Image 1 (cartoon, rainbow, N blue to C red):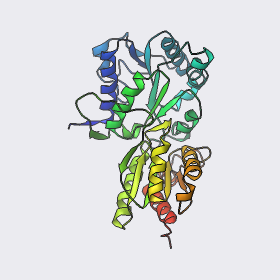
Image 2 (cartoon, rainbow, N blue to C red; image 1 turned 45 degrees about the horizontal axis):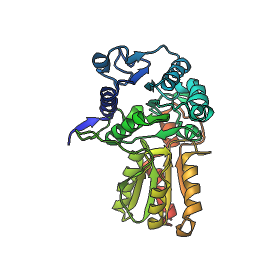
Image 3 (cartoon, rainbow, N blue to C red; image 1 turned 180 degrees about the vertical axis):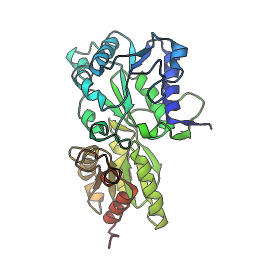
Image 4 (tube, rainbow, N blue to C red; image 1 turned 30 degrees about the vertical axis):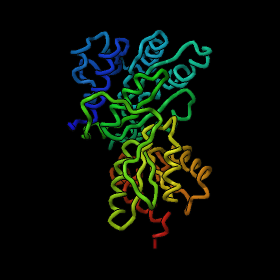
Length: 327
């Protein structure tokens, strides 16, 4: 099986769907002439032309509204945000129009639109460019939220998102675009709403998503050296969430640690912990623990960034706490 970059997997997903369906098009800042801010759309302008690969002004609210209107009229837009931090400006169109249109129109208007771009911290970008938005948008009925952690999942989930009849938000990461992974040549889709076991284990369940999978898997490998076998679950989809996969694992391991780049208050980790205690309480041998970003705007200083975000050391400490191995 060939090995390609995360950005190439996204490019293939969009290009394949555009060849398959002439109603699919891409719009966003620098997606055409510049081949994408992170080169995700490299070569697509040359193949599909300026009518389907559209450079927009620096006006997220404006071009997002155009995308919603296009979806109402039978097209299937892919709206790229250079970063989800900039998409705060477009939140009105996403939350008040894309998410609610099906209900407000009495089922007359589906909104088959994909919003995608970089999300979360990406190094020294300071507080206003380092936020994670999964929890914010997962709170909104009518939106689907996916967060792939590797090239294989990125391609399969994005293709499924483009074919979906409802708005789908694809949360990526600037720090993952260069990641490499195996991706098959043939077509495949990954169903939205299905989690994946990235590592099997028997002693503790570690739940995470997106680039936090790197931290979770690194922690699991270190724990294995000490005889602790962690099962690592990649949610892949935040809404709708695959609670069944989480509960099945916890009923086997009897312990759960959730790793989440969002702030702790009203986070994805909070929702996972609630559902585990509600539906698997009798199986728990310890309280569910959460590893979140610190409850503060992300600093600019590298040492403070490292102290703020989830990392393998914090995950390992939490696992040892739920296993009562800490001295």
